[in-house]
Each structure stands twice: as C-alpha cells, then as structure tokens.
Image 1 (tube, helix red, strand yellow):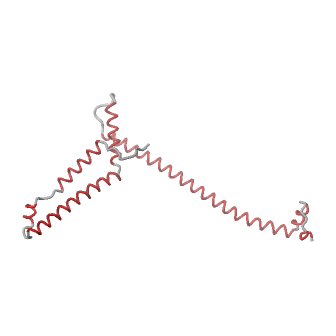
Image 2 (cartoon, rainbow, N blue to C red; image 1 turned 45 degrees about the vertical axis):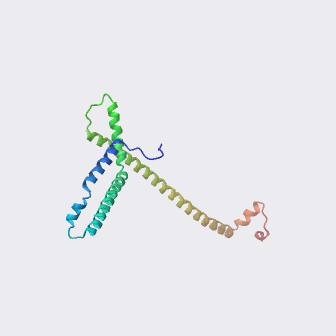
Image 3 (cartoon, rainbow, N blue to C red; image 1 turned 30 degrees about the horizontal axis):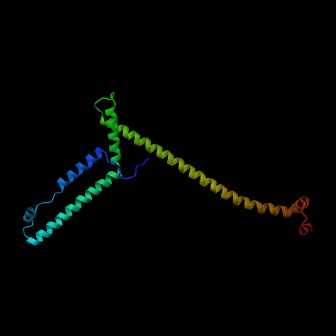
Length: 184
C-alpha cells in the first residue's frame, strides 16, 4: 500500500544529502569582491562589479544544477530505497539479541544482490510467459483467419460438386423442398 504525499526520507539518505551539499558548497565557493578585483585589475570598477555579479549568478546556478542532478541520479538509481533497506536491516539486527555486534558489509551486499537477481529472474520469467501467451494468441488468430478462408473455399467447392452431380436436386426434393426451377 502506497502512502500519499511526500515520501519520508530515512536518516541515511538525509545524511547522504547533507554530506553532498556540504561537499559541493566547499568546492564551489564565491570569492570576495576584493579578491575578484585583484584577479581582474585591468577592468574598471563597474566592469569588475558586473563580472562579480555574473560570477555569483553562475556559481549559484551551478550549485542548483549539481544538486538537482544529484537528486535526479539518486531517484533514478533508487539510492533512497537501497539506503532504506540497509537502515531497516541494521534496525532488525540491533533488535536481534542473537546477532553478533559486527556485521560483514559484504554479507549485506550479497543479500541485496541476491534479492535483486531473484527479482530480475522473476520479472524475466513473467515477461517470457507473457510473450509466449502473445505468440500463442497470434498463432490462434492466424489459424482462425486461415480456417475462415479455407471454409469459404470449401463452400464454393461443395456447391460446384452438388450442381455437377445432381445432388442438389435430390437433396432438395428429399428434404421436402420443391423448387420448380430445380425440378426442371
């Protein structure tokens, strides 16, 4: 059952988003007007101000684009679902008194990989089954179309044979039909 409204973000996904944003901000920082003026000392003061405003706009836009691309990539690759699964697995382990304190990360990766492979196999089998059903339906449809054509051809052959052999007159007379045109 799906919930309506925005999805709840797990703590691991929230931590990932915060870490990414901190890393981006430290990499893409604007420089002060003084530093900018020193770098472009050949330009006039008004040109330096215009260039600095443009630079700030570019950096701001770049921040937004990178953050949007990161969010899009996370959604596309289902990072949130994977982190939620890991978080749920960790919670289950913390509630299990028999579980050892140290968890092998490779075991978790193996379990997730196995689950994904099983899901892929299941979906592949379902797809093959549907494709086979579609192929059988098409074959049945072709047989029905061909049978209808064969049947119409058979009707014409039977009518011709009846007329040639005189069976038409005999059959209509014996069935109680008296057609004067057929009788002579």
